[in-house]
Image 1: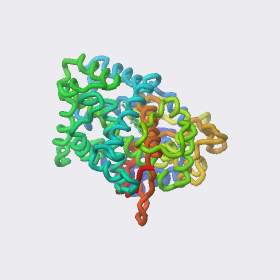
Image 2: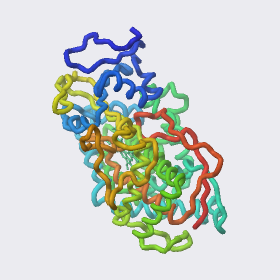
Image 3: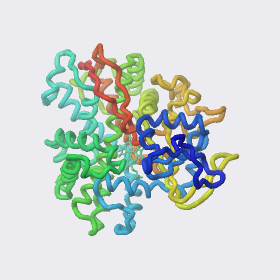
Length: 488
Ligand code: HEM
């Protein structure tokens, strides 16, 4: 049995099955240990499409990115929301949206995502800019904050880079989406909220893996504290709340079957969605730039050109505002951010088959799929494919730019790929916050590059990706790294 390759009960034409010998768990442990290596090994042995038995589920992996466009076409037969509606409620603690108790809620929530996109981004970007300036200037650039005082007078300060990105992005994103106690005022308990959030986030992979919360020590109590932060009577007192969150609150208000705690849990889930990936993504974007000063300087030069600013722009001068239009012109910065996302993202795209059907993979091949089977894409293997990206392990800040324009042609087996970058998922499960996320990371970089000189502290190891949340989004570093900064 140990040889793992069983055909028991397989129907003709179904992909090879890799089953493992542990009842129920199947190959879950091998997958968790190093999912990228596990999938690549199996691809070498069994080809582009194979089924793995993982934790009670038959998961069919589609490894060839040339097949991705065909998969995206099966929106009706391959559903994402059924899966999400099982995992998210158990993780964040609200009743399942699709349970039948909340008619039309799912559709209303989907429609609210538009408020994160299109013309709504202009106002969101404006608020984010103001909030980034508020937090950065007060805490780090010689404002009223305790740490701010350290950098005045051209002295270098040091700190943990992840900790820095986390404290600024968490709070600025929070203020932009949920609002503030009064205009231009900060919440007094943000550090505590962030502390609880980190505790919860540490357990996130286990919760998504369906480990019951009561087995996870104080996690339940921590989650309750986080949820209470968003009780309707508290949120009502906040001003400058984004239209997105305000609309969600309105939708939730329509359902008497939701308790106040349930509503708060929904808002808490959005907090996780909006910072859980953005903070590590910001860390990697900045980390790679600081490590490659040539890249940092090139991106800074582009910024000066677009803003038409003189060489140095210290924070003593009026605060810098980068408009949405200017952000869109920062193509080199865009490329640098996308390159760090390519290197750090490991999200799995999951679909559940709603019926038995034949899944067309490309012009020649199809595979029979059974109702309830899971179809999975694992774009990290594409992001790290040397045929698509030369030297895939190397950070090349200008990888996605060519002749002054965005580079969009990447090839596999001589064929141009429709999808070659997928940190934000795909098709029906694509992240609705992706434009806002890229904007806010770019805004953060703009301010730092304009206000600060930045270097890594000497004599430390390079940051490593922590694989424990492979499949769930942007990977965190195994430990924080130290950096130095001073006002330019
Ligand atoms: C969903 C990635 C930032 C809101 C997703 C998914 C991915 C993703 C991969 C799909 C999950 C799946 O297929 O299971 C990212 C990354 C981000 C980011 C890499 C930052 C770099 C944001 C931000 C927001 C947001 C800033 C909100 C303001 C959401 C929401 C969903 C989602 C609401 C669920 C969509 C649904 O249920 O249909 N994100 N995200 N994300 N993201 Fe993001």
